[in-house]
Length: 103
Ligand code: HEM
Image (cartoon, rainbow, N blue to C red):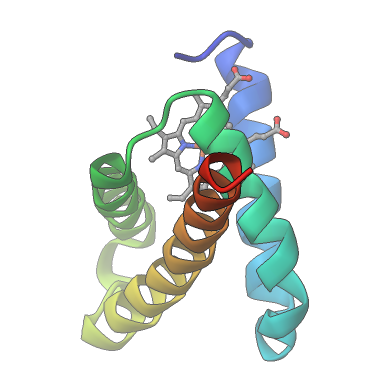
């Protein structure tokens, strides 16, 4: 599925996460861009059931990087953030699909 160089892909993904984490109190302003990101993922063929897989891989990567600093609280915070991101992306994808069939 990944057409681009994975270095660029990693940078895009990391930049998105950094933006979200640095602006945690402003989560609402990300709802629309995340919904658009969900539409983009719908177009490239990402399936809803793949989202938790990506989330769990990400959590495992962060856990590996943080080593002993990884704890239950950090795990809960990252899981909550990713579930929030995934929910907005899937909402965007779903609304887009619904609009497409109601035309
Ligand atoms: C868990 C939440 C996810 C986030 C936050 C996320 C984020 C992103 C971002 C920021 C991009 C770059 C978009 C751009 O270049 O403008 C991207 C691209 C991509 N994502 Fe995701 N993604 C997620 C889940 C998934 C899932 C579940 C899949 C399914 C396998 C997926 C597959 C892809 C692919 C294939 C591309 C690159 C497409 C291309 O080469 O142009 N992503 N993602």
